[in-house]
Image (cartoon, rainbow, N blue to C red; front, side):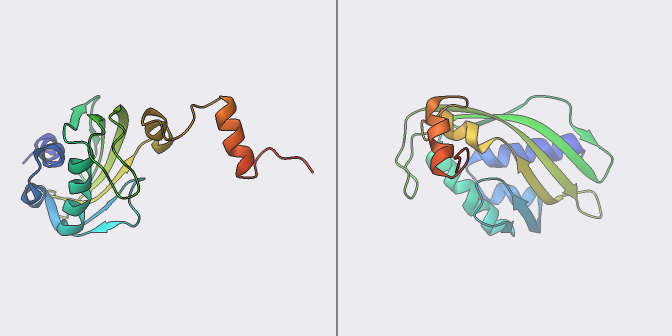
Length: 157
């Protein structure tokens, strides 16, 4: 399987809503992290549980390739855009019914045989996603300044 086929399969696993799809492209001991993980996901079950939260919250989620995938045979950087509408409730977060579009870079390490994903980190702007959902104020607004002041930034003695 080529690197592109492997990453296409990984993206399809995220949107296909089949837990077993991750086993086709990831090692059994996959290590996955993103800004929304409470802790790194270790193993296929934890990764599938994490994906199931996305499926529940964003049932129409789509992953779209947005640029060239860069790789050296062992490490891969894959830019994508994830879009979807927040229609499903999550713990402590009811559905907002808002549409979100987030640019993500998956930084991946392949296993020793270069056949499966061993480690994956997803990088994206979680603050921007929260702004799009209406959970946080837009950058540069009075609301953001007030939030920062409440957190202790910008206060003078």
